[in-house]
Image (cartoon, rainbow, N blue to C red; front, side):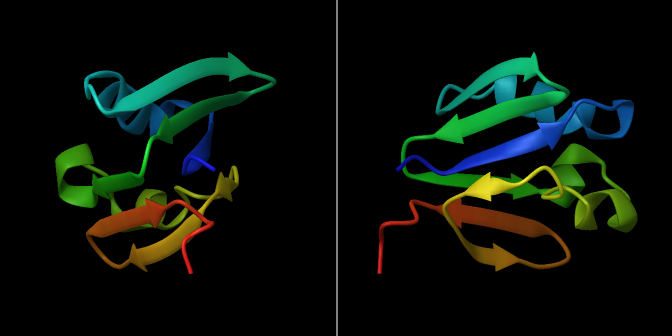
Amino acid sequence: MMPTIFVLDVEEFLPLVQHARERQDLRVTGPRKGYWCIAGDHELRFSRKELGFKPAVWNGALTGGLLGQVVQFDKDTLRIVDGSTP
């Protein structure tokens, strides 16, 4: 299973969608039914500082749901990997 996040289609989260669109290793689809879908082959990794997110927006980044396993979600880094990895 590819790690995937579903991002609510609101202005506050658009920097995340735009950043993902600019990366060769990620695929962005949508919006569909109010959500963008961001998927990667093995890992999703984002930096709060690179996105320019304030902490409250950063902490809400996963409210749309995800597929995979969160291995790091701290004050600056979000990493999600393939959920089938033990």
